[in-house]
Length: 327
Image (cartoon, rainbow, N blue to C red):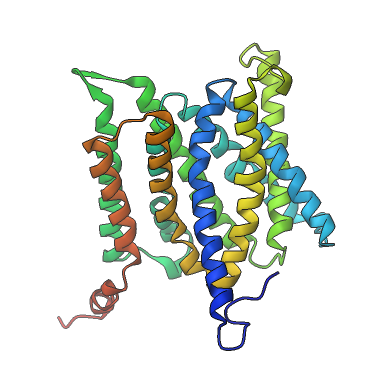
């Protein structure tokens, strides 16, 4: 682990700048995930995209754990948690996003994926006493989901609903909900496990790869999934999926852990604001995706909603509202 800005004498500006460099690099890498997924699902089944991404990421993450001589946790309750997270944090959302991108543009997918922060607030309200909904959070969540409604209105064209696109957007929102549940579950159940982040990521990815691999086998047996080997894939699609596994899953996670250690969790969450603009720009430049008023207004409402939740200016209002009032 590299030294954090709090560990260096006087907060070495070079070290801090390096962590901010990791921050922006991580945002750009994750922003490119959506265009790579889009390329992958145009050539093979979404399950294959999710499986290969997780399998590649898991192999490299296991290698990282072994090379750094980190200890694997003993078999016990924590392994059940890893198995559940493999489903809710990897297998299911990776598949839902891949399936959704069969009918939804990569840029819109990234914007809808940003609603993870909004779903997280709702779930945290139910799961943690210290994270109850405040007027500030309620305003931000309401505005954010109104932005989702604006994006959904884009499916109404010529007096008809584009059903496939709408279902794709709902699938992506389902993935965001899975991510939010996983975050809350990790905080509630895994706090006392004392498992290194790299070890946890490796095990969760392994379980995710097992789930998606099993789904491919069962789907193939039932005739619902066309079994495809990497040899059968187009070179560009295979390269996109392998890049997803190595760069966008393995490398990005390692960078993310460095950023959390160096800049703190609060600043790291601002990556949420970096990913969608990068994905929108890449979608327009490389895929020719259109940028219309629905995207600009809807995305703007979602980002402003997330921003309102994080504004400190509302702290005084929340404190005032929380004080008991005279009868």
